[in-house]
Length: 86
Image (cartoon, rainbow, N blue to C red; front, side):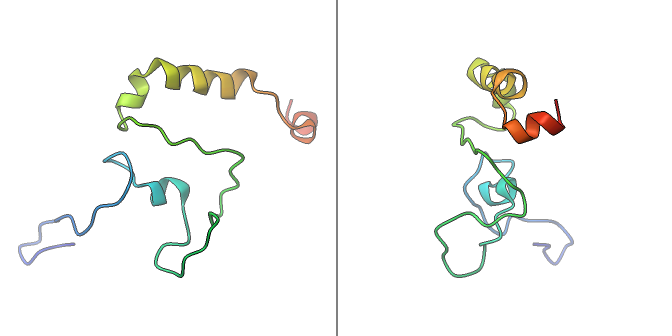
């Protein structure tokens, strides 16, 4: 929110890593509506990981680095995806 002096102030807090909220990271479209049990997002996720570290701390976490490298370089891919994007 913007106060009467034109300064920004925090209007609300939400779950996240103190930089990006969970809702924003997932682009969760359920916000403000009736409860739905499954994620609604225009992004197709084949997996989601929630990590117990702050935004910058992730870059220093060796477990996170291992997971990212495995996901990008070694994880088996769909036969369809591999055929079109080797």
